[in-house]
Length: 158
Image (cartoon, rainbow, N blue to C red):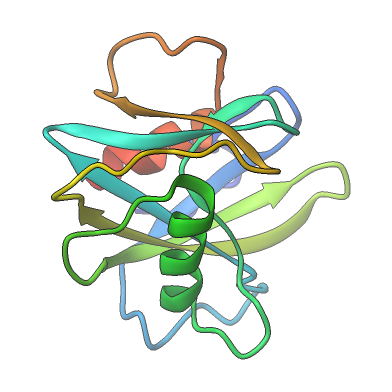
């Protein structure tokens, strides 16, 4: 997809914008901005897993910061388990790199996006960050605020 900073692919009401999405090689991340995060679109029966972040008060894809010494793939697997208690039924598939401009300081950074399928839904336990999970069909209204950038990325993995 083209990089069109004038027309973001998606934006939220906090000043964050998804500027572009690049499908490519997992081993060669873009070098023009940091890659501090990994996200997962986990699917089960035609629905994608969304988590409700207690601090941002919104439905989002599971994911988060890549820790020191960790690959984006390792971070995706860890964050998926920490936030939702769910696991993919096999290895996650790399989808691409999402380039975003984040408020309030308008910094540009990337997130690696992975996808997979969940064979068995596990029980969810509320944790310090996530208060609920929901298997979303990309159509129905979710109870509360939906992060539009994550909804856009979920659609890319369908």
